[in-house]
Image (cartoon, rainbow, N blue to C red; front, side):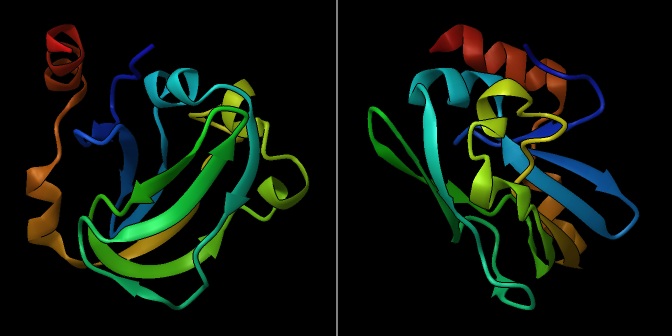
Length: 126
């Protein structure tokens, strides 16, 4: 499932852009490939990231996967619910299972993201 109105990376992160705030999570495709998520290592609030930096780690019954930052920005909030319920990523990856929120510090980094149609086309090529 690909959600219209979100932006995507080739590493299967999604970004919801609201002004200069971006909510980040992993896509439905990514959570299906991971299998049952058992742990999420979240970034620290106030930490700065460049686009493509390692942002978080999600562990599953199959493997551990790095989550990459889709834009350049500062972490302003993390989804602390994932500390006790990492399976939210599987159950609700686009709503309750988000990873963190960033304040964008380089708006140009947004231009690299794919829209939902481009991401669907990318998935069809895999």
